[in-house]
Length: 553
Image: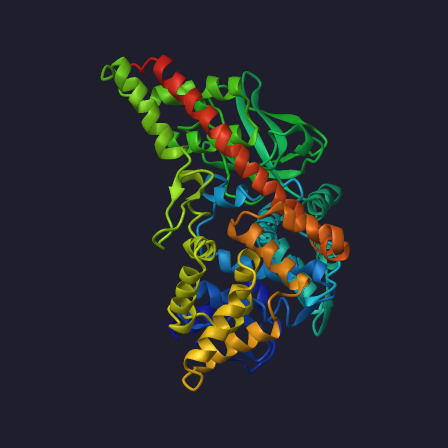
């Protein structure tokens, strides 16, 4: 349990927690072999999965919850980002910061229908709560954490720590919320409070993230801001109105500076001598991305390949037009080219290789023999996001046409316990089977029960009981819940006719999940469009590589 000891030392070393009560004084830590979540900050008993035992960041996260969650409990679920954001902030201090490019798997999910960090949604049932929490986890955790880190860097660590300690002590053994944190920060800050308030309110209560286009010109550095989302290529799914007030941290010859981008201005210029270096801090990849013109890559220590990845993604999402992309990309392609070593054929091959390695859509084969393959929307850019093979395998398994083959797969995966499924996963598995093969779970259960009724394991009996309890179909509310989870969180296509059925007969259920459904449908539309735009991008790059002369030796 070395990680636990190190986590306690880490938490105690944060000055913000000095003389703040630790709740409760006696806290035990229990490793649970069969656990449905990574860890849980129960007062007095922190529980965690067996595979998280040596994870220092997990223990730091849960210990931070002793203050944010246990000492000060939130008034409503709308402020859940406070608990998870602060716990993630102190956890993330142990990790390197992420950039927009390294976080493209999250950027793919950024929807026009994204909810803000603080959401006023009403959590009307446990199913709706679970669905909303999971669907917004990228907002509650990393985005909230980076917002708090940005705020701390803007107001200064001392001011930030004083304000948050004031929040903890002032609301100890009681309830806290976002407004109390905002008030504490404003009270402790001795700078422009109106400006700070604008930063806090826009990032907490406005949805989305930004993309900054940074260009050097004779006046200095001009920065143009847009709201980023993955469907910007569609006029009907485009938001040109939302902007953010952003503290932009940068350095000139190693000296640190801060420039506040005002949300009311579409573009602003930082005065700068022509020969001065300009290095921007782009490590807030869940808040905003930074696109630099090629002439600024060297001073910012950016690899041309990363620039091409980011620029290609901005083209696919519609934030860069063909002309703007081509003009800039030709410069980068020139720097990537080897002078005097290319023929026309080699040029074309190089373009095809670059496109194939980075932008070509590829297929992921399932491990089950005889099943179809699934088309991935993109390759290298989004492989991190598409790496969850278990769902692909399961989806392929349940789509097998031969019902007998289907039952053999079920026997292998359930009765043989090959996947070591927990009891809590049984409803999820049965739901998927019922969606794609109505009645097959019941048939399978009856046949298995007739084979060896006296030799059933507890696991097997539970499976049969759940199947019988649900008869040949599942409650529509539960089915709807799992369909949404499958679509939004697991990259599984949805049959739109299923949604039409729910909308027609159960509008209240749809209303509860309205935002998530919109994001899921938008995401499917975006991925399909990206396949077509990827082909266009390949052709543009081939043409650029062929026409762009190599750089001078």
